[in-house]
Length: 163
View 1 (cartoon, one colour):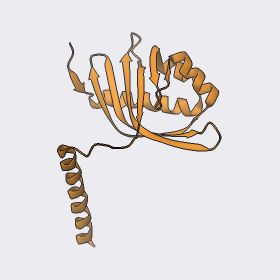
View 2 (cartoon, helix red, strand yellow):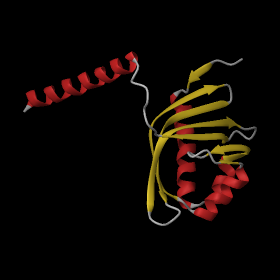
View 3 (cartoon, helix red, strand yellow):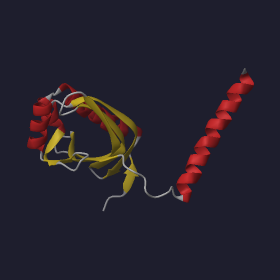
View 4 (cartoon, one colour):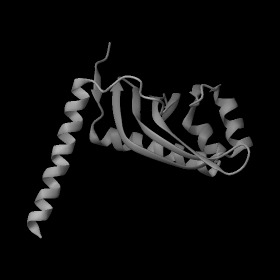
């Protein structure tokens, strides 16, 4: 079995470019681009749990034209052989079914494979929407947050000293 590795800079850039193409194609309702980006075996699970095949997702995009914008946070890009797993924040700004707009944020996991033609194609997508945090932060998460706070505090103090 292949080891799980963090993508090198060139592969990371290539995969992030594929993700940017997907993002823009959804906003533009560019069905030929989406058809090329999604593998025929695609399983796409929307935030509320609605599951689509590739054909159903393309129909959904064309019918609802829901995506107005998408913002990605920091993304983790890992490789296992010819498979890439991208995880990270996603915030969608969408048309609401009854009119108006809505914003939905969460964490998405995307799986791509490098196909025989050399192109990266999405084979799986799942977004987990932000929800109620019922468990307190783990000790390791509290340390991470404290370290980030200390770094921000140090930076602010350095800025004060420069003035």
